[in-house]
Length: 453
Image (cartoon, rainbow, N blue to C red; front, side):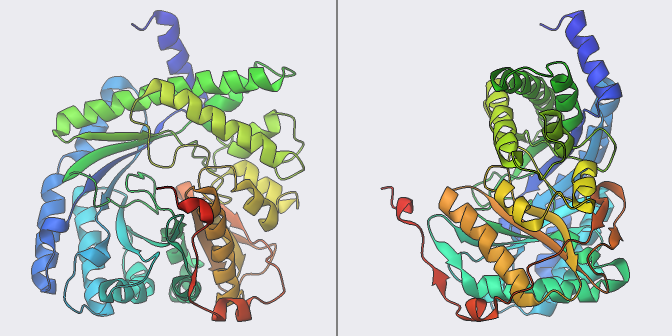
């Protein structure tokens, strides 16, 4: 039972330390809408989404008002769209489907809808190939649709043909949305080991193992963790870990409360709580600043990877004690343009792309929301994706890449996205070519430890 001190502590976290529910995401299976007639499928998709999620935003707003807990985003994720159109769909068919998803998102009032996705870690179907080819145009003509492509898994290896294609797709998407500094790329993620219950965008989709509808909640609270660590300055790392664990426990319990209440009111099963520390550009809401609170002068200096490993592990340990249904990605996100501390570190040269890659070995996801020069080649983008996929494949973890080759921008320029997407400093990439490597194609085999049976 909560006592008055715990209630006041939570109020302080919300009022002063940026504690919030980052997203309530409803997963909706569209498998019942699958078919080969595009018009029929689109009508059924729109009807199902708008019917199922009709009260999602209102319910989240009611919970927010009644409990005093900020709920920043209300979102929808759907079955990977490449599975919905049968027969021999064309890229234009999938653009039409993307427009319908966008209209459904607008009708229901959510800020993003995820699942314009394909899972191609071992090869491509006709539908997969058509959807991937449609991504640049689909992201150009929609506002709320998010796309993801899974190019590798620990069990299957890495589909290097898909990796090569995604480099070209990212370049084309940036060019088609150049009037907004390549904004379309901010809604496109390339995964290895993608999960079925991720509530965060742009990579959310509703996996085929999920129920017909499900509520997944993503919590946040980097500011809360930093404030907690300020109380134990100078203490050893055992104390640091325990402090983070206790804080993550409290954050996750709040997330579970919201998830269960939304599930009850919407009469939709509760899925998971994703306890990822998701930063924002707001001052005091930064994962980088947590790492610096541990004693680093700047995020990116030597010791950063060790500090992030401790943070990620302690967050997970605290979260799993608070809820039996922790899932999604869960840990610490390091999106550069969305984190005030990461932006500062990149601007002064403390944080490089190479260091970020090392950090992804021990954190939740991967190279996220990173702006690179607009003249970066598709092959270089593909090589960056391949490196990150290899980290995920070998370490049996989810990794992702969300790169924005900002048209017309060079190293040192700033790219303004606004809102939670923040401001991205354009970071340098290695000047040496990887084209011959990417041109080999084929599949990088799965690691030996994938043979577990």
